[in-house]
Amino acid sequence: MVPWKTDRKILLAVTGGISAYKAPDILRGLVKAGCRVEVVLTEDAERFVSPMVLSTLAGRRVWQQRDFLSDDHGWEIPHIALADWADAILVAPCTAETLANTAHGQGQKLVGALLLAAHAPVCLFPAMNVHMLDNPATAANIALLRERGYIVVDPESGSLACGYEGRGRLPSTEVILEELWRAISPSRHLSGKKVLVTAGPTWEFLDPVRFLSNPSTGKMGYAMARAAWYRGADVSLVLGPSALHNLYGFSVVPVVSAEDMKREVLARSDDMDVIVKAAAVGDFRPASYSGEKIKRRDRDVLSIELEQNPDIAAALGERKRTGQLLVGFAAESHNLLENAKGKIAKKNLDFIIANDITAPASGFGTDTNTVRVIDAGGACTTIEGTKEDVAEGIWDILLGGWPPSS
Ligand code: C5P
Image 1: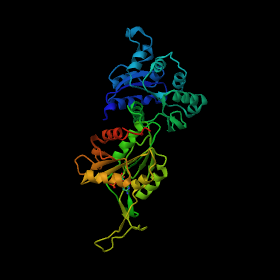
Image 2: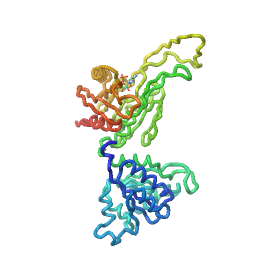
Image 3: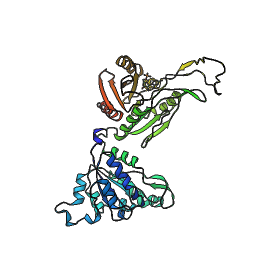
Image 4: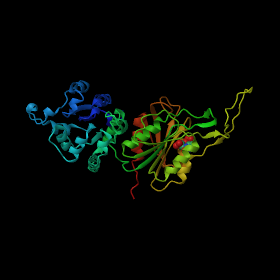
């Protein structure tokens, strides 16, 4: 777990919509992620979810409307103390009324006063009937809140408890956690920047049922994309065939072959501030494709002629514009540093991340990795840990002197 995700103080405010029944699941997700959680409920929320369920899961008392302006707490003023304590505040679900109250600074109730006193990032997760959401008053409140720096996360589409189909569902706990991490990420260095990451293997078909590939799972590229998103980037992930899930927040472009990947990457590359080529692109593909399944017949040996795939990173290096950062990955089994350094020059990269695929707990498919981050001047830093930790360490180095000041 990356250090800034551990032991965070999260305030979960639950307001009174039907999806408040999912609050225990969100609370469990936060606790499981290692957060310290305080829960606040509105009076209406208590009609949908029992305070006792939440206090049992939180392992501590919950805060209710009756605690507001009560003299049970001595000198402590709950809405101020809680607002000061929190590293981040999540309002999930957030009703239309809470959106309106927050947009208009209404502090007559505990949750409203707490949000007025808040100085940590606040993420609001509206969930309601589609017409309530589309109502111009709600839309205007959301726009105003965003303008004022609140993070308002769009609800999902699907079947709603009120019987409608449409926008208005509370996102999953997984999504709520991702939004939380993005809100509290210590670095916003990529805010407003466009980052393209390639990840996964390529499949090079020789007939309708057989292909040439490699064991890449896309985990390292995914970790690079996720860490860039936490840092505020608008992330496009060009992804070869992979079982990765939780691609929330990215604009995902699925591809199969190296040719597909080249086409999709080059179509977007001019717009990008940073391009990270973490995909394990197949260097070769069958020289010809058989539209029919190749039969075994009586032969013992089948020879397949291979031809080279285009080098996408080199093509990007040729058209790289000033200020654009181009980063390659190099999976090596021998002469790691020498081979990796050669590729920086050959492909006009700014950095290469060299990966010894023969090292234990490193390389394809593992959850951990050891890499060397090498810049164009040859300076080299070793980073090891989970792929998530390694991605954070890589970004810290990549962005150390970027964008160049001039
Ligand atoms: O395969 P190689 O070690 O040369 O890969 C180094 C970098 O070049 C990687 O970032 C990889 O994604 C990229 N590459 C590519 N197109 C290829 C082969 C490699 O973009 N055909």
